[in-house]
Amino acid sequence: MNETRKLLHSNVLKTKLDDYKLEVLDSIDTFCKSTGWCMIESSSFGNILHTITSHIFEKAFLYPGIRIVVVSSAFRESKQFILYIEELIKGKDIVSVFHNSDEYKLSIGASTIIARPIGSGDKIRGERAHIIVFPHFISIPKDIFGTIVAGFGIVQDPNKKETQFPSQIILCEKTSDIDLDLYEEYNKYRKEALKQDCLIKIKKEMSEAHD
Image (cartoon, rainbow, N blue to C red; front, top):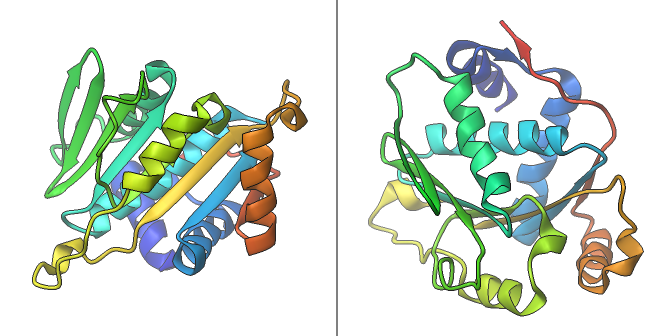
């Protein structure tokens, strides 16, 4: 899988993957496969942006028909993931893009990546996806998060090979300049992530090295 990742990044995104970033991407797949979810912590939002962008682009490119949703309380956060992919693949005729005031959508073949704000929950309630990403988890109100997760997940159709991808929930949080102990809901999920061994701490700076 890592050779495929390297080729995809080198040939399509024109970026290089170092061993540490490969390890992080492997951990996301491993943890989500065993538990259905994982939590990512980093002192830098840039690390989260680079890691999640690599992960969701890879899945959309390699698994036709997959549906991915990135949601945050502030639309400026969730749409950054779409904009960053657009920047990486600028000049390549492999995607179609749609922008409006409360949704950015990027299609790669039959796959779709969508960025939305959480709002009051109405724009995301009932949403179905194979992968859902919360780039700023503590900003999501407790009741709305519960509603989203309760309704999350695409029912797999055995007659449609392209949709056979296990659901993933990825919770992310920037840990600098904030006292996470003040956030009861965050710590509840963090303790569960530690218990289930699906907490990923990004300890190195992950700038994109371009070919």
